[in-house]
Length: 102
Image (tube, rainbow, N blue to C red; front, top):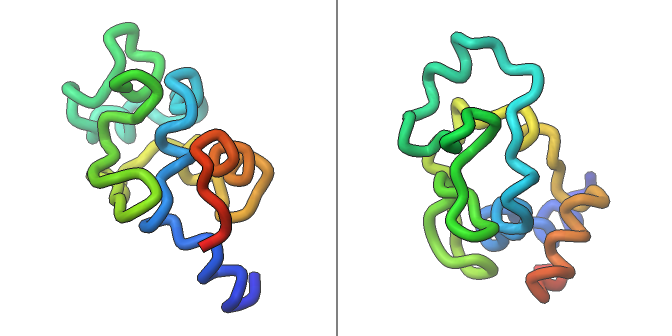
């Protein structure tokens, strides 16, 4: 990714992928030891993924499209690690929230 592309897809001024769908932040290949590090208050009641408020992941702080941060960034699930700036999922989430390139 070029520096211009990196600037256009600044995750911390977006957050669309973390507030696109309550079905998205699902646990998949994580080991139990990894999942145990995630605070219980942020895990869905059925233990299948992250707890969401509407479509937004509860681990996301800040304002979508302005400034956001993942409160568990270092221990975030694999599905979150797999979403990359500018990939199809990123673009789909940005479109849903009306967020263009930064």
